[in-house]
Amino acid sequence: MGAPGRVLLWLQLSALTRAAYKFWVPNTDFDAAANWSQNRTPCAGAAVEFPADKMVSVLVRESHSISDMLLPLDGEFVLASGAGFSALDIGSHLDCSTGGPALFRDPDRFCWHDPRLWRSGDAAHGLFSVDAERVPCSHDDVIFPSDASFRVGLGPGAGTVRVRSVRALGQTFTRDEDLAAFLESRAGRLRFHGPGALSVGPEACADQSGCVCGHAEVQPWICAALLQPLGGRCPQAACRDPLRPEGQCCDLCGAIVSLTHGPAFDLQRYRARLLHAFLALPQYQGLQMAVSKVPRQPRLREASGAKADTEIQVVLVETGPETGGAGRLARALLADIAEHGQALGVLSATARESGAPVGGGSAAGLNAPGPRAGLAGGLAAALLLLLLALLAGALLLRRAGRLRWRRRDEADPAPAGAPVGFHNPVFYAADPAEALPAPQLDVWSSSRSYFVNPLFGEAEAEA
Image 1 (cartoon, rainbow, N blue to C red):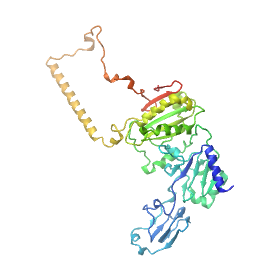
Image 2 (spheres, one colour):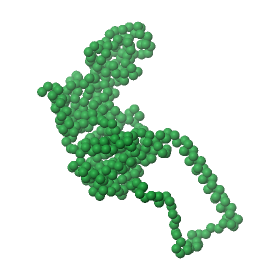
Image 3 (cartoon, rainbow, N blue to C red):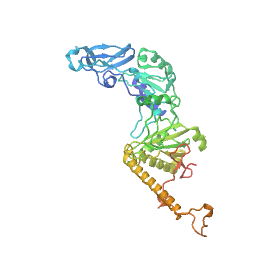
């Protein structure tokens, strides 16, 4: 069977087993501005330096005139058609007469566990993946660019990275023996490095309800790589009582819907239903959604009495200035499950929402709390002065004999039939039909939480 036939068969088998594709994004091309210290390719007549103690494969697409070049310890130039190098005196181009040489950035800076360096093959508008699932899962097919040079660090630990298959340099590896031989070759050593190992196996996801990614043990490394540019710390969420979904590195604002399911549940069909029947509606245009199977937390399993150790997690995130859309969509999903849950294979559902934006009404005002803070401070000061004035007046009246206090047991008994309470409008709605399902504080989070059981068809608050 020829190479095109093998690729077609590989794609067909991947579709039958519901495999996901993860594409490696960065490269080590000579003509990519991001690979140079000044974010620009060397100008004509420039001196060029590669890290002396590194190994790297570099694809050259164009012709370049240089005055000097310091090569790496070990490496290769892959010349495209018409590409090459020629010598040129640095003095003939004034643009290169000042400053130091053009420095090629460290090719070992790209790490397998960095979520920013991968692209999903099934990406769609409005969909995203939690951080841990942006890195190839154990049942994913991994594809490295065939038209670019690259270098990947298999670290930082000495563990084994396991995926379903790897495609690199026009070859698809589905057996450990073939992949190991490639990694030990010179071409493999120029492209893969580090203390870790890379392994493949026939662990495709054949479950229509989806499969857990399997990154619980390496998530600390994933989050460390993701947050490295931020100094290892998460940015502060722009809302009160933020949520942290399973597989996410930092808190976020929005809502989480968790589903338990039966054997008839189909993850891909349900994701498509949410995307086209809900997320495509105009009122939800500012939202993004992630849907996947995740491990069910033991405390959640014990509290709900569910025996399943996994659940379907639907994460709703607000990306625009408007707020509240994630909560409205979460309640709409609960209502949909109450009506169609049995047909969808959903047994039960719970929803949690983050709190209000920090600083007031909308995300647009998060960074401008000054006027509201000044108004609140003025009101507090006025109330304090009024309280002090009332207290001073009461003391003066008592000294003058015009005001007397009696103990509670000396008070006159209330007349028979007299009301013992008062009407508080805060607790009486003007129109009970307009009231939303009553939110209740979740025992594991201070955000609002709802529960729906499609067997009964009504939403109810969690105990």
